[in-house]
Length: 188
Image 1 (cartoon, rainbow, N blue to C red):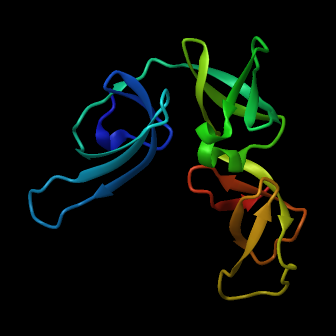
Image 2 (cartoon, rainbow, N blue to C red):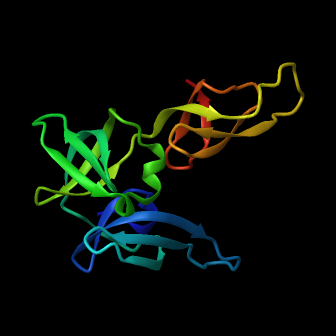
C-alpha cells in the first residue's frame, strides 16, 4: 500500500473503490516546526474521467488498484481514437484522445515499450516509457561556435510537442525527451 509521499505521476490507486491515476503530485513544507509536509495530489478517475484534488499528509495510505499490465505497441490513429496492439496475443485496444490527454505528445506510430493498464480486459490507460525518441520537425538554424552559457532555442517535434533544445541541434535530428517532465534529455 503506497503512502501519499510515495505517489508519482502515472501510478494507479483506488479512491472510493474506483481506480484513479495520479496526474500531479506536489509537496508543500510548512515553515513552522513540527508541522507535517502536505502533499497536493491531482487524480483522474479512469472510469469517469472525473478530476479530484486531494491534500494529504505523507503517511496517508492508498490501496493499489487491481489493474493488469500488458506490453502494447501504438499502431495508428482512427479518428479521435488511438489504437494499441497487445504484443503477446495481438489483440487490439483503443483509447479516445481525451482519455490520453498529455500523453499524445509522446506517441509515434509503431512505438513499443508502452504498458497498457487493463481493468477486466478493458484498456483504461497507458504508462509511457521514461523517455522517448522524437525527430525535430522545425527549429531555427543551428548555431556553431562555443559559448560560455548553455543557450537553448525552441524546437517543434514530430508529434507537435514544443521543447527547448540546445542551439547546436538542427531540423531532422533525433532527441530523447523525458515523458514525465516533457524536457530535452539528450541527442539520440
